[in-house]
Amino acid sequence: MSTIAAVPVSSPLQPPSPFAFIERAQVSIDVAAEARIARRRLMPVSIVYSVFALSMLGFGLAGPHPFLALAWFAAGIAVWTLVEYLVHRYVLHGVFADGPGFFQHLGHKLFGHLHVVHHRRPWDGAHINGTLKDTIVYVAILTGLSFLAPLHTAPMLMAGFLQSYIVEEWVHQSVHFYPFKGRYWEYIRRHHRYHHSPKGAEMAYGLSNGVWDVVCNTRIPEPVRSQLYKSMKRG
Figure 1 (cartoon, rainbow, N blue to C red):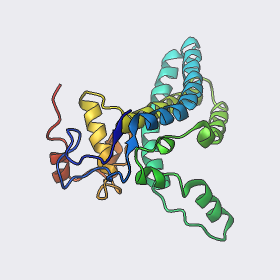
Figure 2 (spheres, rainbow, N blue to C red):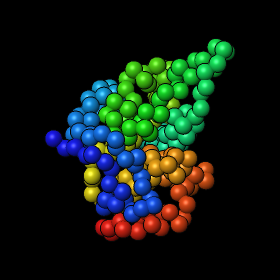
Figure 3 (cartoon, rainbow, N blue to C red):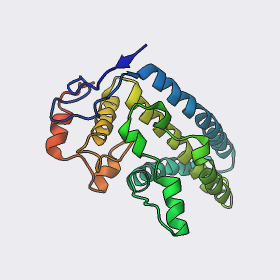
Figure 4 (cartoon, helix red, strand yellow):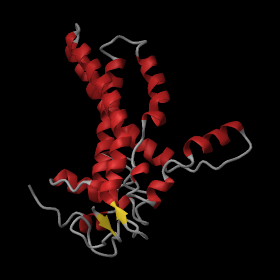
């Protein structure tokens, strides 16, 4: 069993104090068990959306406009990176106070709880990623609308969008549970863990990359970045 009693501030994955990325755990955590919980939650949505997305890509490539289909699929990947950033910043980190109005109450019920627990308990496997129940209604609506357009256009964009969502969810899970090697993994792990720090909650919203943080001026400040990434190994 893999357990931790507290998140070490000066581990190889993190710069030394004062850059403490994850709140210290108050109780022992069985990391392996939490990772299993997260995998079980993520596996069904991964299978359903990946089968759909890759099947659609196959139909598009077998159709009369394979290069256009591939271009639209790639556009869906790019669109997802922006949606990933916007949803994380304005929905998951949004304030949805309850109130007497129908839409105010609905917003609070749908979104008010989504991300709070994840920041309080960043290794809680039940709050790492979304599920079919969380996403299927939105996906069904968007996918249905996409089929009003030719197969090689909007449906391909939606396929790329959904597949990118699944990739992002596994990247997010890996940041919390799996110490993968390589410059990308070290970068995105440090980037996201800083977001979980008290000073980083209003920056570093990108979950799979930091591109939109640069564009939207929510990038980690340069003095912090220089210390954050200085120990990353090359290669």
